[in-house]
Amino acid sequence: MILNNAQTASGKSISIKIENGVIKDVSDTNIDGGVDVGSKLILPGLVDLHTHLREPGKEDAETVETGSRAATIGGYTAISAMANTNPVADTAGVVEQVYRLGKSAGLCEVKPIGAVTKGLNGQQLAELGAMADSIAQVRVFSDDGKCVSDPLLMRRALEYVKTFNGVIAQHAQDPKLTVNAQMNEGSVSARIGLVGWPAVAEEAIIARDILLADHVGSRLHICHVTTAGGVALIKWAKERGIQVTAEVTPHHLLLTDELVENYDPIYKVNPPLRTEKDVWALREALASGIIDIVATDHAPHPSEDKDCEWQAAAFGMVGLETSLSVVVKAMIETKLMDWQLLVEAMSIKPAQIAGYDQQGRGIEKGAPANFILVDPGAKWQVRRDRLNSKSKNTPFEGMELPALITDVYFNGVQTVNNGALTGNRAGE
Image (cartoon, rainbow, N blue to C red; front, side, top):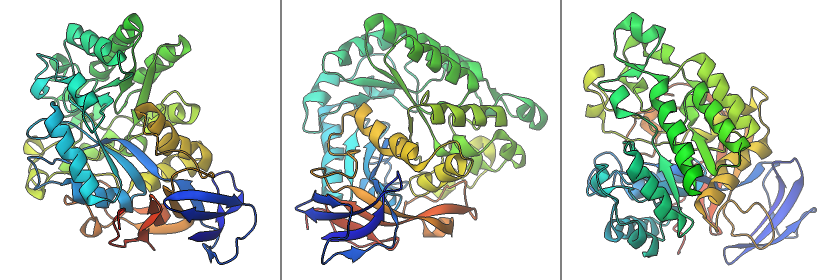
């Protein structure tokens, strides 16, 4: 397969030849017999370090296959399945089940994330070594959805994963400071009477865990940072050479707590939407590299868990299919980032943090043929009834977004063509 006249993130026109799932040649001129892609952007496949696929146990919300389909449409060639399933992914057996389901779906790489503690209960370490040694080769561990709030247990986890260069991904939320919390603590929560979720509940855990990671010399990753204070703490840690990385979600780059005023549960998310000041701090931190990556925190829920009164509604939003376009709107259209920086934040750095050696390699000779084609000038409208995710809880319903992903290649196989799934599998 030969593709001609593609534009790299740096603006260079190239042609590529693919054989046996690998990029065999990259040329500055057209290659005979190739297909002209019409100057679309060619980017490495996106990599998500924070995806909730719900299987096993919550297949009414999502399955590994439906989540893979949504990810593929969204330009992802690798996603990371969080551990808060039922049963919890806290043993080699469960992570291997998720790994095999991803292989069977065959649309993208599905990398299981193991739980830090048994049952996500925060009382005893899970089988970290067994999960690392399993066929899934887990290297990222998280109790996401819950915080590892016990400092001694968090220290032990950081020490344990250091032996195989693993990383603990922390959901930074002090449970004592967020009892019954519903939204960001601030003027909006005070006005509408919802229990506030203070920024310090996030920042206190970030500060503690930075110090713990420094003390034991281990790797810490902060999930879904949402506050300006959290950004300042991460900046402080990086200036001192502490091994900390951080992520921000697309929705926290674009949406604010003002949207909660009408009590629409579609905007109920953990951690909560914050203020405009926080949004701009997050954008600037991502642009400068203080925040390393974008991660979706794709959190599907069946309609009955969101189409209800605010207090009873589940926390979470789907995001795999809209993430690239939302980041373009928040970061490129505001001129805070260019396409090359976006590629680093959504492909190269996530793969490096998690050690996904077949991903985030760039468009280069010898690299696995995991890439996407994007029409940067196209606009499209989000319609929840057209989402490929099994759940439809998107906060972007009806919004017109920039940048259309038209083609996706996974291991050299075209899985998306003209924006639609082809039905192909990587092994076919």
